[in-house]
Image (cartoon, rainbow, N blue to C red; front, side, top):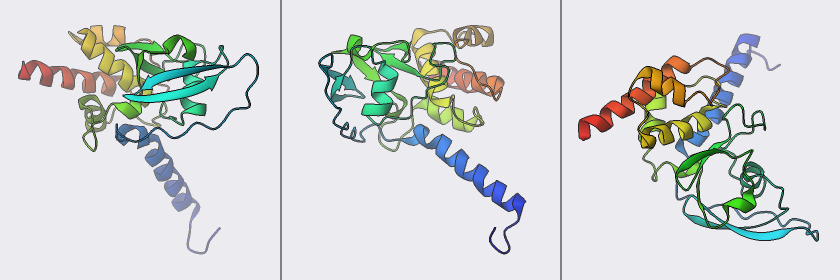
Length: 202
């Protein structure tokens, strides 16, 4: 341990760093180029597909059994979408496919060929956050931040679906997304805030 650095100070720095990293998906520009996928070792069962991810063409060579989640994280380098339970129970991997929310861990990448896929990295427009992203920050609707990308993707879909009529309705339609930190009240507040603003503009 460095001279002058206390244990409390070291823990504080670690927490600050972890918090900063957790918040990265909230502010990733939509137009950021999708990094080139690493060249896989081709086997006879592999197939070539093209996904449309965040408005950009993404050619991939994958095995037919590869999930959309693994294709996004491991080949496209889009790690904002998180792997939680890998069983469709926690919602951390939520993305939009043709505007509808799906659990990407249960969705085969090959089934998404030719369909529009939106991840957390594709919500912001340049430096301007999506209203739901801004509301999550404003209402402190996350703690560790691991589930936050999935929560935000589910919340944007919920608002588009028109299911923000009451707190009870918001909770019902967000039930597929688990927050182990228990930030549920703040998440509901953030969604209600965005819904109220949209109603005011209407």
